[in-house]
Image (cartoon, rainbow, N blue to C red):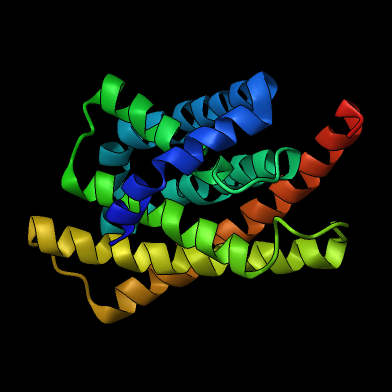
Length: 207
């Protein structure tokens, strides 16, 4: 359903690219490239090595990158260009880089990207993030928690997809641990850091 929704929204994403202009498109590409270089590359290269040492708990270490760093970059971009569709640009460009350089064109990867876009864009719309006139610190804490809850749900979806496609098995307590730490904790922290970073960048840009 999420994948179908994204495919039907491609025209709207294109209109977002036009509205934010060349500066916004370049910024989205830059932040997505930073997410690819700072998250996807090290997780791909170090993931197997950490898995040998830490076993199934290696994801709690790599989650510092996929949770804290990725959501810090995403939230910074959203503060700079607060429009529906910016999240979709971020995730689609990051996925395209992964697909081209690492050949990551897998059903699980495609569906997780679609789910991430649909869940986060939907949450931001429902919480009024795009309509908010003044971004206060209290609202920053609130939206950071919302992003953490979203990622906790996406962590659950991802682990269910891995169990379906690759016949893996995860105990319920293990899934819950990843949802709380990798999803809620890491992503909320990363989102709040991104909120602060994006606010400072807005001041530098004079907007």
